[in-house]
Length: 156
Image (cartoon, rainbow, N blue to C red; front, side, top):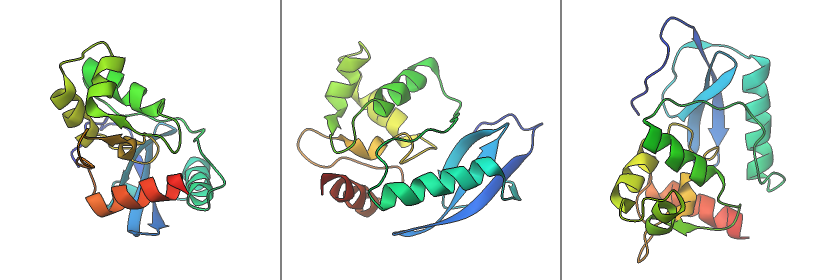
Protein backbone atom coordinates (compact mmCIF):
# COMPACT_ATOMS: atom_id res chain seq x y z
CA UNK A 1 0.00 0.00 0.00
CA UNK A 2 1.11 3.55 -0.58
CA UNK A 3 0.93 5.89 2.39
CA UNK A 4 1.23 9.61 2.84
CA UNK A 5 2.32 10.39 6.38
CA UNK A 6 3.97 13.23 8.20
CA UNK A 7 7.52 12.05 7.59
CA UNK A 8 9.14 14.29 10.21
CA UNK A 9 7.60 12.21 13.01
CA UNK A 10 8.75 8.65 13.79
CA UNK A 11 6.62 5.69 12.76
CA UNK A 12 6.53 2.57 14.95
CA UNK A 13 5.43 -0.94 14.11
CA UNK A 14 4.58 -4.15 15.94
CA UNK A 15 4.33 -7.56 14.24
CA UNK A 16 0.87 -9.11 14.48
CA UNK A 17 -0.08 -12.68 13.54
CA UNK A 18 -3.55 -12.98 12.04
CA UNK A 19 -5.32 -16.25 11.20
CA UNK A 20 -4.35 -15.57 7.58
CA UNK A 21 -0.71 -14.51 7.95
CA UNK A 22 1.77 -12.05 9.37
CA UNK A 23 0.90 -8.36 9.45
CA UNK A 24 2.29 -5.23 11.04
CA UNK A 25 0.46 -2.66 13.12
CA UNK A 26 1.90 0.81 12.47
CA UNK A 27 1.50 3.99 14.51
CA UNK A 28 2.57 7.60 14.38
CA UNK A 29 1.78 10.47 16.76
CA UNK A 30 -0.21 8.15 19.04
CA UNK A 31 -2.55 7.03 16.25
CA UNK A 32 -2.80 3.76 14.35
CA UNK A 33 -1.98 4.55 10.73
CA UNK A 34 -1.77 1.15 9.04
CA UNK A 35 -2.27 -2.59 9.21
CA UNK A 36 -0.09 -3.97 6.44
CA UNK A 37 2.00 -6.91 5.26
CA UNK A 38 5.23 -4.88 5.38
CA UNK A 39 6.87 -3.30 8.43
CA UNK A 40 6.92 0.46 8.38
CA UNK A 41 9.17 2.39 10.75
CA UNK A 42 10.87 1.28 13.97
CA UNK A 43 10.04 -1.89 15.89
CA UNK A 44 8.39 -0.88 19.15
CA UNK A 45 5.98 -2.20 21.75
CA UNK A 46 4.23 1.10 22.48
CA UNK A 47 1.14 0.95 24.69
CA UNK A 48 -1.00 1.97 21.71
CA UNK A 49 0.32 -0.81 19.47
CA UNK A 50 -0.12 -3.33 22.29
CA UNK A 51 -3.71 -2.17 22.80
CA UNK A 52 -4.39 -2.46 19.05
CA UNK A 53 -2.96 -5.98 19.11
CA UNK A 54 -5.17 -6.87 22.09
CA UNK A 55 -8.29 -5.50 20.38
CA UNK A 56 -7.50 -7.44 17.19
CA UNK A 57 -7.07 -10.62 19.26
CA UNK A 58 -10.52 -10.01 20.77
CA UNK A 59 -11.99 -9.40 17.31
CA UNK A 60 -10.64 -12.69 15.97
CA UNK A 61 -11.92 -14.47 19.10
CA UNK A 62 -15.38 -13.00 18.40
CA UNK A 63 -15.24 -11.02 21.66
CA UNK A 64 -15.09 -7.57 20.00
CA UNK A 65 -17.30 -6.01 17.33
CA UNK A 66 -15.96 -2.46 17.34
CA UNK A 67 -12.56 -0.90 17.94
CA UNK A 68 -11.75 1.92 20.35
CA UNK A 69 -8.47 3.24 19.01
CA UNK A 70 -7.23 6.56 17.65
CA UNK A 71 -6.97 6.01 13.89
CA UNK A 72 -5.56 8.22 11.16
CA UNK A 73 -5.10 7.95 7.43
CA UNK A 74 -4.47 10.77 5.04
CA UNK A 75 -6.86 10.98 2.13
CA UNK A 76 -8.85 13.33 -0.02
CA UNK A 77 -12.04 14.81 1.47
CA UNK A 78 -14.01 12.28 -0.61
CA UNK A 79 -11.91 9.33 0.61
CA UNK A 80 -12.29 10.50 4.21
CA UNK A 81 -16.08 10.60 3.83
CA UNK A 82 -16.05 7.08 2.37
CA UNK A 83 -13.87 5.75 5.20
CA UNK A 84 -16.11 7.42 7.80
CA UNK A 85 -19.16 5.78 6.21
CA UNK A 86 -17.43 2.38 6.11
CA UNK A 87 -16.61 2.69 9.81
CA UNK A 88 -20.36 2.95 10.51
CA UNK A 89 -21.26 -0.36 8.82
CA UNK A 90 -22.27 -2.65 11.71
CA UNK A 91 -20.43 -5.87 12.46
CA UNK A 92 -21.93 -8.77 10.52
CA UNK A 93 -23.57 -6.55 7.89
CA UNK A 94 -22.53 -5.53 4.40
CA UNK A 95 -23.24 -2.63 2.08
CA UNK A 96 -22.87 -2.44 -1.67
CA UNK A 97 -20.57 0.11 -3.25
CA UNK A 98 -23.72 1.80 -4.55
CA UNK A 99 -25.31 1.94 -1.07
CA UNK A 100 -22.08 3.34 0.33
CA UNK A 101 -21.95 6.02 -2.39
CA UNK A 102 -25.59 6.93 -1.68
CA UNK A 103 -24.87 7.18 2.06
CA UNK A 104 -22.34 9.96 1.43
CA UNK A 105 -24.65 11.80 -1.00
CA UNK A 106 -22.72 10.77 -4.14
CA UNK A 107 -25.08 8.13 -5.60
CA UNK A 108 -23.28 7.84 -8.93
CA UNK A 109 -19.77 7.65 -7.45
CA UNK A 110 -19.78 3.94 -6.66
CA UNK A 111 -16.57 3.35 -8.67
CA UNK A 112 -14.80 6.16 -6.83
CA UNK A 113 -16.15 4.66 -3.62
CA UNK A 114 -14.56 1.34 -4.58
CA UNK A 115 -11.29 3.12 -5.28
CA UNK A 116 -11.36 4.73 -1.82
CA UNK A 117 -11.96 1.28 -0.31
CA UNK A 118 -8.85 0.04 -2.10
CA UNK A 119 -6.77 2.85 -0.58
CA UNK A 120 -7.82 2.07 2.99
CA UNK A 121 -4.61 1.59 5.02
CA UNK A 122 -6.58 0.39 8.06
CA UNK A 123 -8.37 -2.80 6.96
CA UNK A 124 -10.39 -4.47 9.73
CA UNK A 125 -10.32 -1.25 11.80
CA UNK A 126 -12.06 0.55 8.92
CA UNK A 127 -13.95 -2.56 7.76
CA UNK A 128 -13.78 -2.26 3.99
CA UNK A 129 -14.35 -6.03 3.83
CA UNK A 130 -18.01 -5.23 4.60
CA UNK A 131 -18.37 -3.43 1.25
CA UNK A 132 -19.39 -5.75 -1.58
CA UNK A 133 -20.46 -5.44 -5.19
CA UNK A 134 -24.17 -5.88 -5.86
CA UNK A 135 -23.64 -9.13 -7.81
CA UNK A 136 -20.45 -10.57 -6.27
CA UNK A 137 -17.99 -10.10 -3.44
CA UNK A 138 -16.12 -7.21 -5.07
CA UNK A 139 -12.46 -6.41 -4.51
CA UNK A 140 -10.36 -6.04 -1.41
CA UNK A 141 -7.13 -4.17 -0.73
CA UNK A 142 -5.48 -7.29 0.69
CA UNK A 143 -6.85 -10.39 -1.06
CA UNK A 144 -10.31 -11.83 -1.62
CA UNK A 145 -9.62 -14.90 0.52
CA UNK A 146 -9.07 -12.61 3.51
CA UNK A 147 -12.26 -10.67 2.74
CA UNK A 148 -14.20 -13.95 2.60
CA UNK A 149 -12.62 -15.10 5.89
CA UNK A 150 -13.59 -11.85 7.66
CA UNK A 151 -17.16 -11.91 6.33
CA UNK A 152 -17.57 -15.54 7.47
CA UNK A 153 -16.08 -14.73 10.88
CA UNK A 154 -18.60 -11.93 11.37
CA UNK A 155 -21.58 -13.95 10.12
CA UNK A 156 -21.18 -16.82 12.61
